[in-house]
Amino acid sequence: MDWTMILVFLGLSIITGIMAGFGTLSVIRGLFIFLLFLGLAMTALLAELGINEILSFFLGQLIVMGSTYIYLRMLHPEILNRVKKEYTYNGPSHGC
Image (cartoon, rainbow, N blue to C red):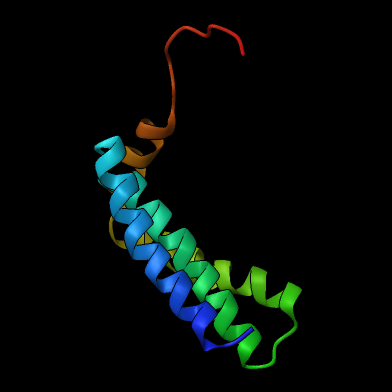
């Protein structure tokens, strides 16, 4: 990997985060997609710095998503309740 891959993932995080947020009319889903691709950018950065690719994948996601979760859990637990409510579907199931 090289530095262009990191820049691609950073660009994808911004563009797809905005598109997902506006497409679903949900800031929470847009932020989730943004953080997901930001974790992939962190993975590419860690791999570029010489860490094993498999280990860097888990570390990249853990650093980005894990730190965000801990921050929200400690300081803003009401946001996590809104996220849980948004991702829970209570409507009728119509099969596959």
